[in-house]
Length: 140
Image 1 (cartoon, rainbow, N blue to C red):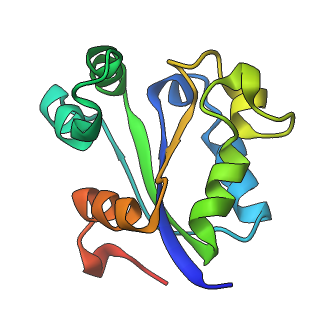
Image 2: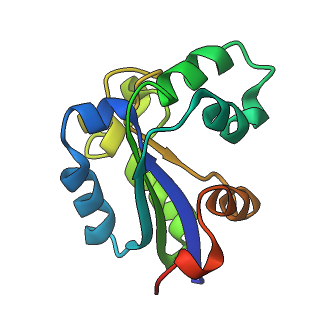
C-alpha cells in the first residue's frame, strides 16, 4: 500500500443537512486523515472551472448550478490507498446503486444531490488538490 492524498468535497446538500461530522467520521474511522480543509461557497465561475472536464456532458450546467448553490467543505484526505478507499466509502455516484453503509447510500438524496465528491485517480487528485490548496496549506 502507498500513502496517497485525494480531494473530497462535502457538497451543498450534505452541508444543508448538517451532516459534515458524520461524513468526516466515516473517513477517519477508515484511516483517512484530513490534512487540509476549507469551507467556502464556490462561485459559478469556480464551479465551471473545477468541473470543466464534464463541460460536454448533459448534466454539466445542473452540476455547476448545484455546486455553486451553497457552501461546501473542501478537504484533502491522506492515507494508504486514499483514492480507492475514499471512493469505496463514498459509494456509487447514484445512491440507489450504492452499497449499504456508504455515504451515498445512507445520506444522499439522488444522483444529482449525492452528498460528496472524490477524486477518481492519482492525476485527478493532484489537479483537484492544486485547484483549492497551495502546497504549504497541506499539513501532515
